[in-house]
Image (cartoon, rainbow, N blue to C red; front, side, top):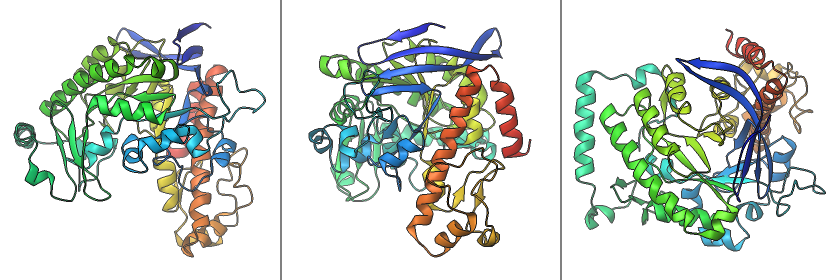
Amino acid sequence: MSNSISRNSIQFSITAKGPASNNGNDLRFARAGTLTTPHGTIQTPAFVPVGTKAAIKGILPEQLASLGAQVVLANTYHLYLQPGEKTVQQGGGLAQFMGWENPADKDDSNGSESIYGPTMTDSGGFQVFSLGAAFGRTITKIAKGDEAARTEEEQQDAARKQAEASRMAVYDEDVASQHGQLAIIDDEGVTFTSHLDGSLHRFTPERSIEIQHALGADMFFAFDECTSPTEPYEYQREAMERTHRWALRSLKAHRQNLEANRKQAIFGIVQGGRYEDLRSESAKEIASMDFDGFGIGGSFSKEDMEGALQAAIKELPEEKPRHFLGIGEPGDILTGIAEGIDLFDCVAPTRLGRHGTIYTSGGPINLTNEKYRSEFIPLDPELSSPVPGTEAFTRAYVAHLLHSKEMLGQIIASMHNVGFIIKLVDGAREALQEGRFEAYREEFLRKYYGR
């Protein structure tokens, strides 16, 4: 099967398709593909572990490769603040700076330019947002229905407050000099204070692109405004339209740098929250721009996710790669794959692992619960093969480490979780290639969620 897009920076080809997913008269397919970057080839669909500060918490880069990772993602906001993009650039770029070597055979680097592996960076938009309107609230990528639901009166009140905040979104020296959490969004960009020391900073689309050029990832994202799924329709539209204007500015800033265009690909981001009409409109607008690939950003409600995702994807060109930003729940990943998503990233595997929760074939379990102290069985007895590097450890041992506050317990749990998700996605890719994706998905959901 040959359905591909080629640029100097990346090449993408679809190698297999699964059953059609029908949304009205539009048919979309789960697909497997090959994404070639300057630093190596990625077989898709693929899970992208997140190394926020150029490190996957608790996992060495060489261990990450043994878990099956093909590409890693780092955070523009955090690397800008510490150690600074110039330091990363002087260190040879993100992959070399963090010692992330090509997971492929070192004697056959798949035509890549160096031994260092594929990398991605986000735009920093979500982190800046989370320090502003969302600070002090729990903001998730997938919200429950009761979190997203608001009465009409509550929506109107929230819209009025947000509109007032937007009108007041001008630089105020007195406000800006106050230490603490602050993010003021205006049409030109975002003024924010560092969570490290309260110092004042400014991101614009052009500045975000400049930073990401210095970080040197193979693929990166346009600067966008990420919203909470609880925000009302009126503000979701306002943020979406601002994201579109920022997308054009991001794209222009990238295309003007010929050297960066040769080495790096830029992805546009679709916004619109949980609303299908906004998602469709945003995807159509972003798809009309000259991006190398596309990200589905923002947040959804659990009940509305599939419809909003379908509305977005049907407007995106089939021949370019698609990335679902910040999605790590196993069932949501399989939903994304079914709808034609190629890449996923999330901090959840290591975040859960640090708190003692591990994924298993029968659903997640928390090893800090008392009963696991005496379970002398593998972390997931139902896996056909253990996650590499965790073969020797039992639930009882890791539970002991966690109760003893030994960091090794968190490391083992994190390694297991990252490996589990990578195995899940690798299995989906294999099932797509063999024409049995639906059966694979149904069996996993039945065992994991009991349905």
